[in-house]
Length: 296
Image 1: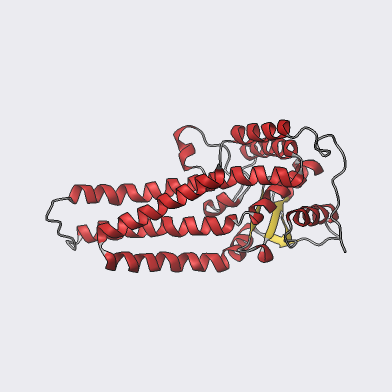
Image 2: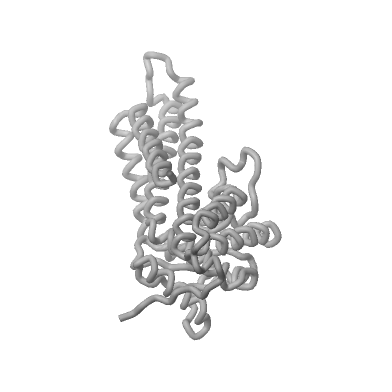
């Protein structure tokens, strides 16, 4: 269902791009689209390094964090992926994220606060969620969604400025409609892009829970992390908020949830608990030790 929702939302973004281009004409459309795609190609190739640098993440050695490395190695082996880089952010807030444009360039970063707040079982649940993001190619999906949303925004701005400068002469007198389009289209594109982000979080929750075999560990971790985000909000850049496992700025309620990068915490936890009830025979839920990856 979440995969289908992502496809439908990406289709809606594509339709907005086509509608914006049609309103302006083919010349404007291709020029603005090229700018938007150029910006996002840059983000595709360099965003992982920028995000890690902005977050203050550093590579942590196996000797410094043997259990963290063991968990990442085990879960990536379960997922059939190369082992991602393991990084630590020396910050008191509790959060984690994955980045990298491909599994071969993936990195998983956790904060010091997360390691202090969560139990090892809960940390494993969080790492499974992040590795699921890598497995589902969510960085690629987010980049495509951002590219389409940026294209819509650029086209709407061009539409507005061309009208103000007298560059458009609509004989049918659609000036008011054009102004409405220029105002509404970027908001609509942003809402669709954020809807895609929320769908991918649900998908990573489910895939991560199945990967770890322990949905309740991730549910418990999310409960603690959302509570901690209220007490110790992160000093993070808004542009990187969607990468984190929970909103680094705390809970958002009311209509502002439409502009949230993350689904409601209570709904994520409810789904994970339902998933745990559907798989009651899993040995990890009974408290057995996690299976180590097989080598050779």
